[in-house]
Length: 287
Image (tube, rainbow, N blue to C red; front, side):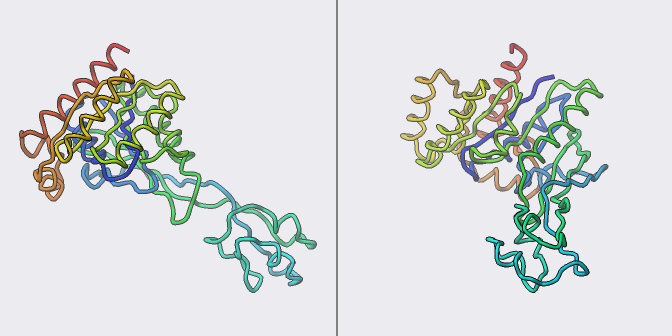
């Protein structure tokens, strides 16, 4: 069993569209959407939910009105202005516990917070494990670890060959949680200055965790000079540019119809995505 994580230094590079095509191309796999803050892979894969689980993480302060003497100390010390009229706003509360520690009457307790849900669903391409983090909730790295663990258990039970993860953008905690223990990172970038800069940062993160990297350039013909710069940079770093995917409105047409582009039509986009998957599967077999 091999795990590949598809990342992008910034949002909007087309990562999820490519992942959906991988779902159609790959055999014997389980899909994971690790972008729990803004999960959208399910929009293309159209899953049917089989299991729904609560995700409890972090704490929120709760004031016992019977014990509270309304001394006002908790309101004075709360730096997040989460306590007003001796009631806690659970959205504003950061769970720091300062009010709990200073309350002279012991009227404040710290209770676990329901931070979101994670799901095991069935699609026409196989299982999809995904999640939804609650509004303003944190600990998305912990939720990413939970969905990855469930995907690994499914792959082990069913003897699947691949775990294909749609990673979050950026280089923060959710990305690190998505990368830990993976066999390969695929970075989808675009030929813009911000795309090039953020690709460089993601490569540094992958190297820190000794994860092998390959790159795919999406919309490569929007700025050919920048595409050449990306290729030159990757060559100097010893990183393979496995595919150069051209811009084509057919991708949008496929999205509107709720289909991965490789199932919608076989044009200049689809062969490059297929080539990218062939490079991925070849590297994973030989790793």
